[in-house]
Length: 138
Image (cartoon, rainbow, N blue to C red; front, side):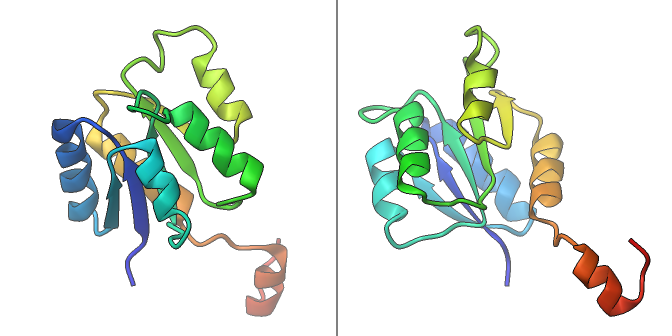
C-alpha cells in the first residue's frame, strides 16, 4: 500500500504541482485548500506525512500546526512546511522547527528534493531490536 500525504495548499497551481510530483513518486494524495478543511480531515485521517502551506485563508498554517501539536495529533507524522515566505521572514524556519516540523521548503521548490526528503522521512526505520532479530550488529 502506498504512503499517504496530506497537502494543505490554497493556490491551485501549486496544489497541481504537488499532486504531479507526489503522485508520480507513488504517494496517495489528500488535498485541503484551507486550514479549516485540513483540521476537519484530520479528525478521520492520519496521513503518513503532511505538507503545510503557512499562508492560508482563515486559519493559517501556523494555527493549524499549533492546533495539531496542542491536540497531540500526528505525533509521529513528519510535517513539511512549504511557504513562499519561509526564508523571507526572519526566524520563521526556527519557529516551524520548534513546533515540530521536520523540514521547511521555500516555494517554488525542487521536485526531486521534495521526493528525496519524503522518501527519507517515510523509509522504514530499523531499531536495535530489529538488528538482534536479524542477527546484524548495532
